Length: 280
Image (cartoon, rainbow, N blue to C red; front, side, top):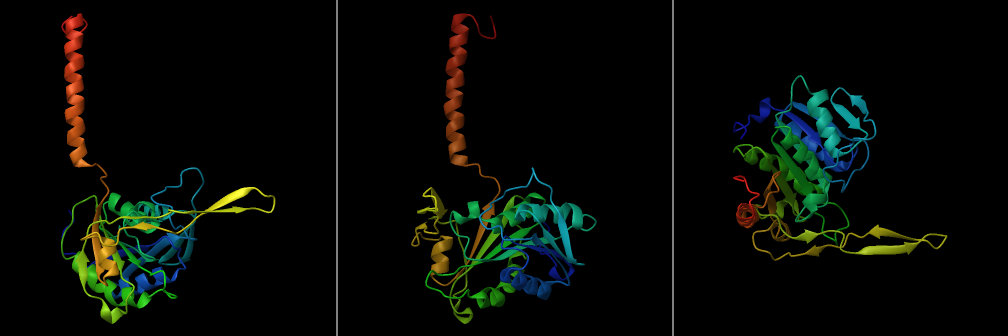
């Protein structure tokens, strides 16, 4: 666990995202971060990297393009950006907090396994830095992204989150609802819901008649699942969800230990009976 509470006024904050260094959401998050600390750095992908998940560039060279003293663009993924920020750009004074976002669109349910926004926070977590991913949910019928919600509420959410410690290997996922900023119902601490993206393929033909595909944005959702991130956001609350980098499913681990333990017992007995066991 990190030492809590974090004194944000004394913190070095790293801001990153997956929508690219020029996205509206990262500019918003930088403004929020600057209300918390004077020591704010931005290192983000040069171009949009949505849905790249926790991918790391290993077969092509990475380049850092300096925008100014505290703004750097990386020609890679969100993971690359955070890795280079912590281990190179800020190697002499590592960040105390990583903020990723604000993503245009929610990262709810199974979105988290595809999201570059979550991946940037995950990389910060793996590097030992407390990390928070922030996303602004946009309802399908909405014509504009309701940035005012995150702008108004993000700082308070961050302050509360860093007032308590959470374990190493855990990152925090925050989703703001698509409601007027003054009608947010509060903060709900939630579990990961069900919201599988890519549930539909759009098949088309190119000018030569050869088929190609777009992965559509249609999602299979369970919006009424009690206590879930999606349910909270659709009800007008800010969803705060702790996520773990350890993907081990403990109940199944115990089941498999029992199953393979029984197999080993049987195979050991058979070896002994055939004279090929350890005592032969």
